[in-house]
Image 1: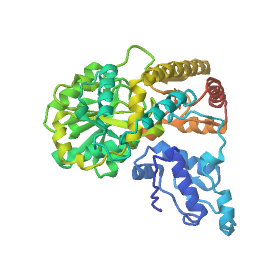
Image 2 (image 1 turned 45 degrees about the vertical axis):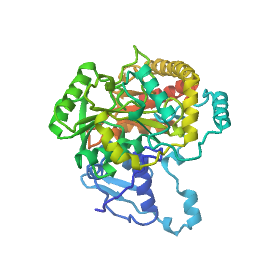
Image 3 (image 1 turned 90 degrees about the horizontal axis):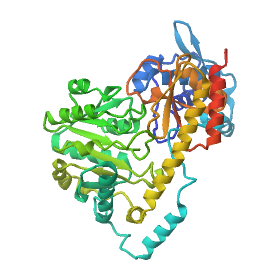
Image 4 (image 1 turned 180 degrees about the horizontal axis):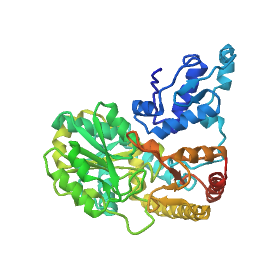
Length: 469
């Protein structure tokens, strides 16, 4: 049996099962996986790649359906013979070789990534940009490592008013994306406390997992219940730092209860060197009740590290995030972090700063809340027409919901949807360990128009309720 070393790329914008499929298909086409080669079992490959078993099953099922491999009862999966394939020229091969996302023409894509940009205030952005450049500030020189002070003042004021975060501009670090800030934070924590281990919600935001795991850190999956991360399991894990998304868990949509938040703070206060990383990635969009204040606002002992971003509220291409360090880590930053130059252009910092200060940001947020609420309601209304046997969850906030089926597995849902030209996303890809088979898919709606949402759910209903498809 050949070991498969698939290099997964979370920045590629494609589901993990498609990347596994594409890798195996390419290996077969290039003759590296030869006729009669036995592939690893779905369980073995899922453990090797640290993905869910159903993710591997999706890739194998697609390869079986296209005739690249076959499943032999009680024996496993084997590569089939492809006569004449290796006589193709390189040019012909390039024309034939396509990934699933290229060969399947998706009419509707319920991607949970990205935002709607049709209603972005481009004129206001141009005006602000012009004003920033007209001031002839010294913006082309390297600025402060933490970010320009005036920008950090604006962020501190915004966070206090909108999220209840208690912070000073002196404690804010501006960086190009959450992943950069997470790498910087790891340096600070390790400089202070040595090699540390992290606890992470399971399922989780996998990009954060790959950052930490890629630096050689131990990442311990901790299950969730209806209130958030299980503190009992966390306490027994031995982890020193817990990474959580309390305002809107990704991807399950759970809002951490006030009781669980206090439990989390209690865990952090039990030992020196324990911290909680609060990722507040999309707190701006909530559709039921009032916004949930940040966990950081409840912290009085310097145990919560707050991370936020403008990717969801302004644009993912902007690449501006920020981190609020407790006083207990500022000494470590002064020794280690200050050596790193800021990774965000000073021009961009000043544009966003002015965009917020002149009120454009607040007006844009209010407008987008209304637009996303309309799309959110349209999606829920369409899903109600699917009939019995389906459950909706995670609909209180954010830009995606979960759809579970009593009749179909996750694999069947993804495959049936694909045959109808609809792209949906398996929940299992967000688990950090081999997990029991799921029956839930993720439906994002930010980038879709209302008519596309309605059309997509109509096609899903036909696909899921059609017998012997």
